[in-house]
Image 1 (cartoon, rainbow, N blue to C red):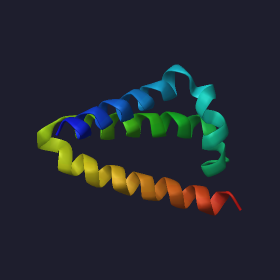
Image 2 (cartoon, one colour):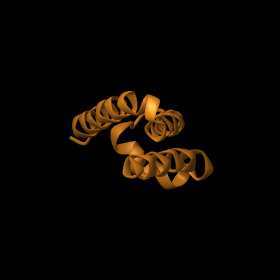
Image 3 (cartoon, rainbow, N blue to C red):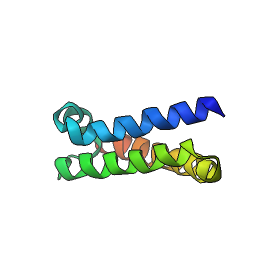
Image 4 (tube, helix red, strand yellow):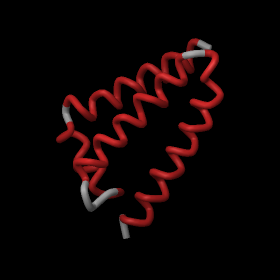
Length: 84
């Protein structure tokens, strides 16, 4: 599907941006990951690149969708837990 392929490319580009401009992600990342934020920016960037690329290929799309859903749920839970 063209929409999922495009979404995957956008997600992968966002992941790459974590490495190109990590300071832009620090304020929001610090909420979910108050300790070792810089390392978490890099980990999240790598995860988003991998998931985004998985969404672009038909063969890995199903795993990419499952991984993206789990990643979003995990990030949401971390943010909710640490935002208190």
